[in-house]
Structures are given as C-alpha cells and as structure tokens.
Image (tube, rainbow over all chains, first blue to last red; front, side):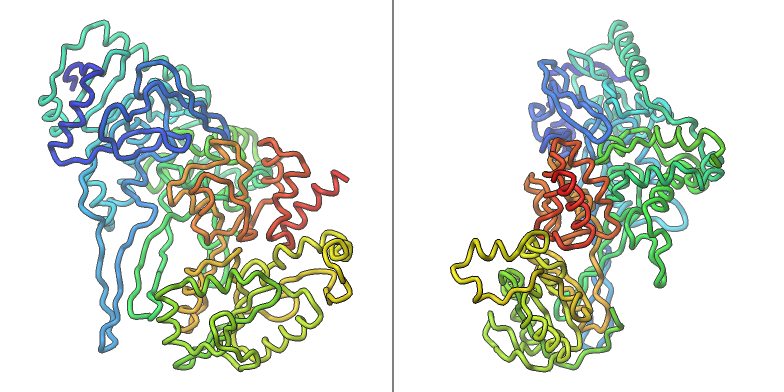
Length: 368
Length: 266
C-alpha cells in the first residue's frame, strides 16, 4: 500500500520513529571499502552519493556529488548474518559433581533490529532461509528468535551492479513482498509503501506528503531502467534436469582449475545455510560451549563421514555447490537457491561467474 | 594420527626446543590463567623457558618447537620421540622447517660464510626440515607462532582421550565469519588467505592487511590459481613466487608454486 512521500531531509524521522518503538536501527554505511550493515543513528551516516562498481573478483566504491543514500547495489552481507549468525552458541554443557551432564540451551540476546536499505534479492533470500530454518520438521530456535526481532525497510534497487541478475531469477530489482516498509528513492525523497500492519502504523506516524503522478512515472521508469541494465542471466529458472544430465561435463574440471575452494561464494551467498558444530571445552573439562559456525561445501570436513571424505577434490566440491544451488534446491524448497544478487561473482577472489559457468555447462550434451 | 588412549591421571608433559625463535613456547607462557590451570592438571617435567629442565624425561605428551637443522638435532628428536607417547609438532619450524628453510632453496653455505666470522664453528645441515621428515609426528599445530587457543584445545582433546580436531580450512572462511571485508577484492592486495590454513582468526585481514600465510597451506590449496591471481593484481611473476617462499617455503605446495615462478625468472 502506498502511504505517501517522505522528503529527504525528513529521513531522520523514520529512524526516530523506529527507535521510539524500541528498535535499534541497522543501515548501510561505508566500512573498509564496502557497504556494510552497521548500527545507524543518524541519516548523515548513510552512504550519500556512493556508488559501487562491481565486476568478477572486484568491488570498489566511488563517491559522487549525488544526493541519494541508496544509489548502490549491495555489499557482501545481505540479511544472512543477522538471522543465521556466523557463530551462534546453541548450548552449554556442564558436568555436575555426580558426573551427570547438564545441557543449558542458549538463545541470542533479545534485540529488536530495524534494517534499513534491504534489497529485493535480500528479501527473496530471507524467504529461502525461512523455509530452511523455520520449516518442518523442526523450527530452529536461534534463527526464529533473530528472525522475529526484525523490522525490514526495503529500498527498491535503482542501481544494480554489473554482477547483478535478479531480473533473470525473478527476485528483483523491485521488492514485492516480505518487507514492513518499502521505499522508492527519488532525488528529493522517498515514496513510502507499507507491506505489513506494523509498517502501515509506522508510516501513519510520519509526516508524509502526497505522491504525485510525476513521482510515480519516475519510479516506474527507474525500476524499468534497473531491470534493463542487467546484462547477466541464468539460462533458465529451473536447471535441475539440465545440470543432473551433465554431471560429467568437462567444464567442471576446467572451473576446478580456477577455483580456490576458499568458500567465499558460499559465505557471501545470502541463501547458503551450511554450518558445522564446534565444541569448545573449558581446559578443566568441566564445561563446554557448543556453537554453530558457518561452514561451506568447499571444505574437506563438510563431506567427511566415517573416515571417508566424499568430495575430496575441488571439481566435486564446486559441482556440489552448483548443482545444489541451481538444481536439487528445487526439490527441497520448491525453487532455485539463487536470487541473482551477484555476490558470488564479485567476492570470488578469482572472479568465477556463476552465470557464465551455467551457460557453459547447460549448453551441449556434456559428452563432448 | 593414531587413536589416543585415555591419559594417566596427571599426564607428564614436556616442551622441547629445536631451531626456532621461542615464539611458540611463548604461546604457552601467554596462556595466562589457563597456564595455571594447565600446570595443576599436568606435570610439566621439561619446559626450559618456564623453569623445569629434564630433557630426557619420559612423558605422555611432548610439544616440540623448532626445525631439524643440525646433525645433533636429528639424534635428539629421535631420542625425544622414543621417550614420548604423543609428539606434537608446534609451529611453522616444526611443521614445515620454518623461515630458516629458505636456505634449502639457496646456497646455505654461502649465506653462513657471509654472516658468521667463523663459519666452521657451525654444524649446519644443508637444509632445515620439519620434524615429520625424521620421526613420526602424532599431531601438527601450524602457525608462526601457534595460537594459545590451539595449544589448549590440543591438550584438552588429548586429556579427554580423543583426537584433536584438525583446523585446516582456508583463512577466507574466518574472514567471512568475522564479517571482515575482503582486502583482495576491494583493494587488490596480494592476500594469501585463499590457500592458507586457518587458526589465527583472520588476524591480518581484520586489521586491513593481506595474509602472508604464516599458518602454511590449507588442505586442497589451489596454489596455481592463486599464483595467477597474484600476478593479476599487479605482482610480477617473481614477486608472486616470493609470496609462497616465506615462513612456510618448505611446505610442499608452496615450494613448488614459488620455485616455478622463481625459475621462470632466472
């Protein structure tokens, strides 16, 4: 629902309104040469006039004189670290005097977070993470607690990067669902829409102007331009059959020669959810902390079972990541695991491009 | 490593030193409170830097720092091995020959002649080598220096009677877990993280500098692809080779990647 127009110089009102509801604001800021989501107090901290220039294996920021706060595509994070924490303590075990062991579950601290500047691809990825962590047979308590604490303020993407292909996966550049508020940024301010009851309530508390026809046309033109600008694409939204028919395609070996198996693609992927359990006992052995940490299908331990490493080389590991993400994900979650954010392309140190590999693997018979 | 059996109630521990800088022994000494707890749980029978000296004692666990660099050292490490149930190689010198293994790639005798007034006083082998090239090693803790956290984890695991968990993933994973921004992707720095064993907690990238691989090669390291990338971010072929020939130059994948580039230059 369209609620009105928020003047640029009133953006702080939005932050104050969220704070008065008990939310701590998290927003995009320039840190160490990238756009990161960090605690946001004042609108002046937003990356005004900042653009991101992304290419395979490269991410650079550039400052312009422009007025916009959200004139960039994305940074390395997405929403994943806020819900599926890189290190989450799940329980603590203690040995009592009588040698019995007590397990004490731990939950993340109850923080209400309002995230400003979420992209359509981030919301699509969050929906996929929800299906994984909240779906049957069991809801993950830590994820659920973090997820329930979020208030999401999306900003429709106006400036996709060279790595983006959300139009091809059908996940952007315009956010259509999953947000509390969504903003369309124009030079003078923001068209505000609400996507939830609490979003509508919050919007009603702001001093908004009327949205004009000119603003709507500009917003529509901007969305179309953002879509048209994307050059990369996947061959299809469902590559399951194509990939599993080509498990012996020679391209797997070629990409393995380039791939560092460093796990950066899976770490920055907003939908990858693999994790490892890490036990850290006290030195005296009387207590131990059990944490869940981000893992990757590119590690040796990920496929280690009973003395055997199932996927010992990079060819097998890359193929696992790729065929799961774009193939078997359909069986598990009813869609591909790729939302077209392009992070795996930009943050791969050697610039391997998932769209290029998909095109190479899914064309031809795979027996050449 | 073999299956560790349950330890004696108060296991006897020794810390030995070979060719090294003592930095890994400091990883022990810097444990703080954990060192006090440790000293009440084990019997530290030999640890020259901390006080007790009994190099010939029979022990349950021997932590060994340093590389094998002299003929006498070969005899001594065999002796240590024969008196120890578990032998833990601790640090880059013990696991890969250390910085001093750079002489393996050069004319070591010429270096000695350039530096020392009376080179004949030195009884040096032509190469500096890892402990595992001379004796059976039950566990390797990589790093220059090793982290105290790893030492504690190893001791704890051995006291439980289980195999210590090997940390052999790439530094990149710890960078991403700590939400550290990639210095290679954003600044084109010649980071060794993608081929380097984790354990440091991505210390250098967290402070904005490129990893120089003081923890040595990670498992399944694609040194060729990284070598090409180092050249791609602006290093000469020789300079890219030198990135591999540093603290862990004698670790096989690094030796090969570095040498190929150095030889091409010659």
